[in-house]
Amino acid sequence: MAAGWQQIYRAGNSLEAHTLKGLLEHAGLAVRLTGENLGSAAGELPADVLQVTVWVSEQDADKARQLLAGYEKGNQGHWRCASCGEENEGQFDWCWQCGTDKPETNV
Ligand SMILES: [Zn+2]
View (cartoon, rainbow, N blue to C red):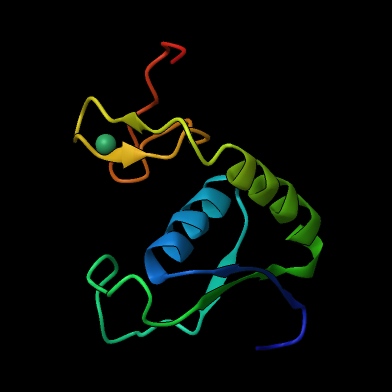
C-alpha cells in the first residue's frame, strides 16, 4: 500500500468491507480495500473466505474512525428499504443498494 494511507478496519468478509466502503465514500472519503478476491463479484463470496482491510488516506483517518465507531455501535436495528427491499444497517441514513433515504419512522 502506498504511503499516505492508513488501515482503519479489518472486515470479516468482502460484503462487510464493501458496506463500510460505501459508508465512508458517502461521507466523502476516498477508500481502498485490500485482501479482496478480485475475481469474484461482491456478495458472491463465501462469508469467511478471507479478510478484507479498509484503508483511507491519513488526513481522513480520524473521520473514518468516527464513522466506523458509529457503525459498530449502531450495528443493530436494521431497516428495510421501501424501494428495493434491501436490508440496511441501522446506522445508515440511506439504502446502500439503491440510495433511497431511510424512512423517517423511528423504530
Ligand atoms: Zn434500496
